[in-house]
Length: 102
Image: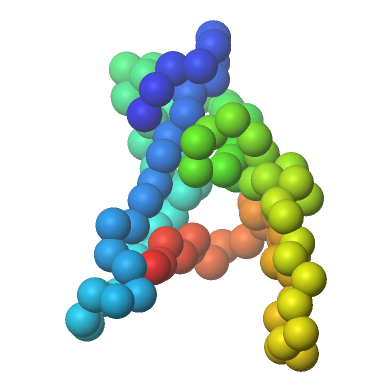
């Protein structure tokens, strides 16, 4: 967690496991619960009305994830199953926990 500006912080979540680790699994987490807990901690445990804006960023934190996907080099290939990555923004209305996997 790092402060960016007034009322703005940067959280970084990462799963250190990779596809080659035996018996590796991802994890699910509730991003809104984390934001709510941070808000309560910052406000002395008081429940206050708040708004969260969440932007998915690249690994470096310099570009939004959508911009990173657009700028990524799309190599020409002869493979028929090779398709460019499609960016789907985070659905903040979803009640499904976020998945962090290898």
